[in-house]
Amino acid sequence: MRKAPAKPLIRSIAEVPWKEYPDHFGGALSKPLVDPENAGARHLDYRISMYQPMAYVKLHKHKVQEQIYHVLDGEGLMEIGNETRVVRRHDVIFLPPGVEHSIQNSGLVDLVFLVVTSPPSDD
Image (cartoon, rainbow, N blue to C red):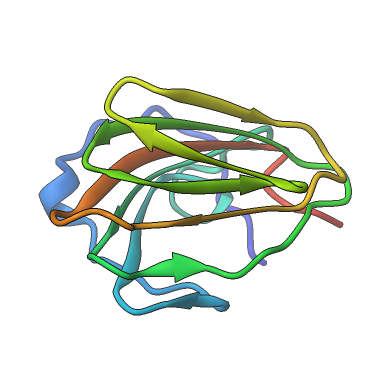
């Protein structure tokens, strides 16, 4: 991954194209808003995600990364370890390294959430 020099950044979310990352399925899309590639961020990856009904990311875990999910709209199922919970607007989820997790849209409308990951790489 090529890192750009760190720089202040103001951008419209509309300027950033939707991307389907590996192991994301069924319309599980994200916009990378601030990361090493587009802003030179060294300590975080910040994106907005929009999962269409039935979209999901497969169960996975991170070696060193911490993550925060903040649900903005819709509802879905968040699997953390052996527990599955309904998540809705204004719910905040913290995931420490090494914890298996997955999220899927089990609702009727798009599930929209912010994701903050630190550090940006799981190496």
